[in-house]
Amino acid sequence: MKFPVKLALGSLCALLFIVLVGFVMFPKIIKGKIKTMVNLKPGNEIRDMFLKVPFPLSFNVYIFTVLNPDEIHAGAIPRLKEVGPFCYNEWKTKINVEDNEQDDTISYEPVDTFVKTNGHDCKDGDTEITVPHPMILGLVNTVFRQKPGALTLANKAIKSIWSSPSSIFITVKARELLFDGIVIHCGVTDFAGKAICANLKAEPSLIHLNDNDLGFSLLGPKNGTAGKRIIAFRGTKDYHLVGKIVTYDGKPKQEVWNSSTCDAIMGTDGTIFPPMLKKQDGLMSFAPDLCRSLRATFQKHDRYDDIPVGVYSASLGDQSKNLEEKCFCTTPDTCLKKGLMDLYKCVKIPLYASLPHFYDSHESYLKGVKGLQPDEKKHGIKIMFEATSGSPVWARKRLMFSMPMEPNPKVDLFHNFTPTVFPIFWVEEGVDLNNTYTKPLKDLFLIKKIVAVMKYLVLLGSLGGLAVSGYLFYKTQEKFSVSTVKPVASDYSNNDSIGSVSNGNNYNGIENETYEKY
Image (tube, rainbow, N blue to C red; front, side):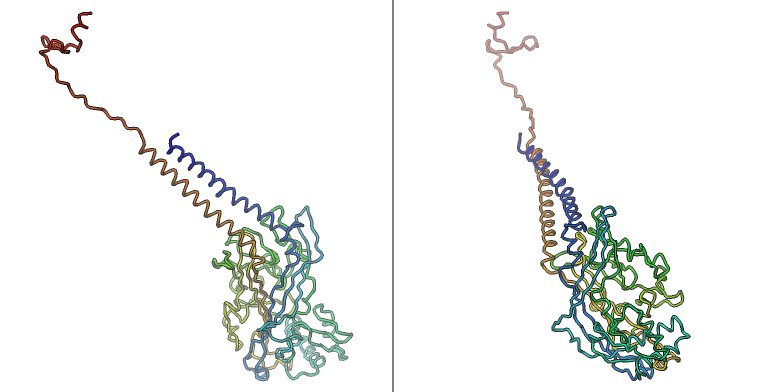
């Protein structure tokens, strides 16, 4: 077998091999391996991490202290100063876990536990801050919405329970406001005070310190307390469904917003996502604290610890303009402007959620207070997501909580307020995967990179081999040539000559002796 033929056969075999293995089989092997790794079947490492995240998330709290409380009572615009961060480690676990093999689901109750930590930028929990009393402001706003006729009763109860306060603002330690609790003295005997305290004692978010006193904190009720039960797909039968919530609190949809669109429970709980998502799919998760699902949308490609990732961001939308978000409005005529969401139907008190410092919100909210400086890098929601494995490798989830402050002639402390949305505090939940958890991803991409380089080198080499063999085969083809026959001069006078001419006829060159034989 000639060399060009051998080269052509070898190149063709290499071409077929690399197409079959490098372009067909290897991606399927990687896909199959990931499918078996990311499901929540017992025994899988990802399940153990899902049930108990092996590292704490960072949880930072920032509180807005009021600089001009007396002026606000006289009608001035609030001047605020951000104090923080107050730093905590957030440990996420899931308890009372049960599996349903037939439905391929797992059920659990999520628990978040916060542990104070100190860093060089972290503020001490004994730092004093001045804020609107959340209970007084929340009480008046709630009564105003539910039973406006009972505002006079609420005014009397405030004087009774809080001993005729001269200001709606209180100065407390940060740890008391956040976790330890602010004391509410409910050992009152007057009708108004007892009526309000009876309702407060039935509120599960308040701590019963003793028979008469209650404790209120912003985050204390959430600390170490099991959330409502969730049933989610394990993804062993269909990896596209891994982590997707089936029911929350025993229901396939909420009963909060009276709308199938806004009450829908979509996505995961945010601790896991399906692998091999396309960027147009976005990242969908359900936020119980907001009673809604949020979609993070793709923004750009980037790298994290040398891993290619997609950058995603989320917002609270604009219920005043987006028809699909109108169902989040308290009433069709009371939609908040861009960037704000009224949580009244969700948490039963007038509480507004937004991005910190009113970032990506209507400018009117920012003008209602002084001292805020919205910044995308500091206040936006951002996720770096590795789509092949479905892993968030870096994330910052940020939310600010505010309360409406409006004048009310039936409540003594509320006579002269200028209407505004008053920021109270904001939180930042963060995760940064270190090399221990990014190394498997980096190894995966290294293998993919090596295979990609090799398969294209082999592909180019095999195509080049086919081209060279074709060229050589063409050059070595046998070529046939015809030689010119030249006449040989003869001596016709010689009797022994052959081919004499007689009478104009040609005779073959046969010697006379041979001729005479015939």
